[in-house]
Image 1 (cartoon, rainbow, N blue to C red):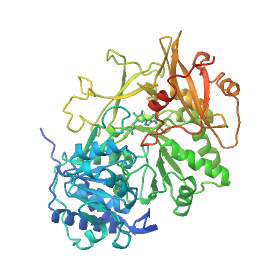
Image 2 (image 1 turned 90 degrees about the vertical axis):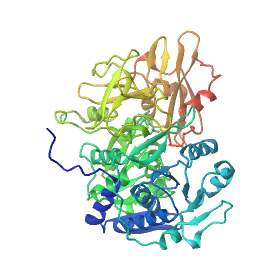
Image 3 (image 1 turned 90 degrees about the horizontal axis):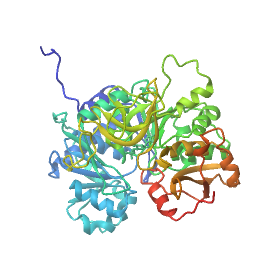
Image 4 (image 1 turned 180 degrees about the vertical axis):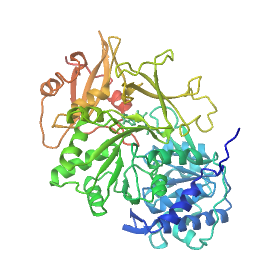
Length: 543
Ligand code: AMP
């Protein structure tokens, strides 16, 4: 017997309608190149999205067409999210930090018909214009007064384009399973792979992520996503903030600058901010140096890479801010786990709570987790056994765009293989020990590079740390610690290695330390280990 409930589709226009009706006045603040503090409301954002939808129709674009963005986090980009996906097109967000060959690849692979581009990324496109000849037009995200000179063909000014249009637009009735957005993984090997989100997956992910044990977002929040709109839809914040009617603070090009970030958080009364650990490192270094405190911020959600214990401690003890770790991937929309205390664990000591907070967290409802050995057998949730982490759920990719099952990314029984290695403890807290490719294999045993990095980050002189395996005649591989020191601090190799004593198994202690001025990062701010392995390929361990 079928239930007798309405089958209204889960689509992005339903968020646009909801936020415009219930939270029309809620503010959206942006930093843009043409305005250091642009302010308007959710109501105006949705009205302008409708103007954009009318403009797209006039340009002859059809449902299902891919329209790309190369842009920072600001209000125009948000309008494109709603205007493009809401009218049945697919919003292909492109990471401007991709190498030119990767940019060319993703634009051609997606067959983008139009690209919305921030003025500062116009030169990037001019350089590759000849190789992306199929793109029919470029919309520059500014007004007529700030339009740059460009050699790009078929250029439109965004403000002029939408000004000419009516705000009368009825969102189409879309199939909830139709594609809404596209984001390519910025893998370090091989061509980027396209993850194609649907309206349904986007809504379900937004529902799940606002929950109190996930991102915990409400209309009372003022949320600042430092995570870019060009990578995994800024962890779904444009949608989840719309669902609850939170104030949005969009930092534009000022994403990696500790001082600018502090000023924005403070002056706009941000209660919640989300980002990768490197961003918070810059912020914490600034507050330390300038003697400032984050008085208004209540929570940060941090993920995308392992979160050092020292960072959780600094937020808690110096700023009174709760750092909640999250884990996920582009292929997972991205949220899979979130780390908050569960009932029964209230009496842990502050130190034990800190230990727990370094884990990636518990699966949120809708994302199933399992760890398996090399033969695909499920491993116990004892906090010790580690294996390949696999996931399943309605906001996890079932395949990559145009790869038709040839990516080798899924198990025979339909679970997605994350490429991460993890443990899961009896309480259900998952901890990432490594990327499969980064695990250090020493004498047949595995050493977790992440745990060593986190330990090193606990040393006050260490600003950033990475651990890679280097060849060893007896043990196959041994760990090499590569560190960037905090400005004006000194520490010897011996002192750093002694710091590991009692914190990890003796045989895990790195064999050597290399001091560098900076670590290479990927387009999404993660340490680029493949580059480090290349740099240190000939490194001879001294120990
Ligand atoms: P991306 O698809 O670029 O967002 O990268 C996803 C990958 O980032 C995951 O597969 C993990 O390897 C890594 N990652 C994300 N969150 C965490 C976390 N909390 N701890 C450790 N690694 C993480």
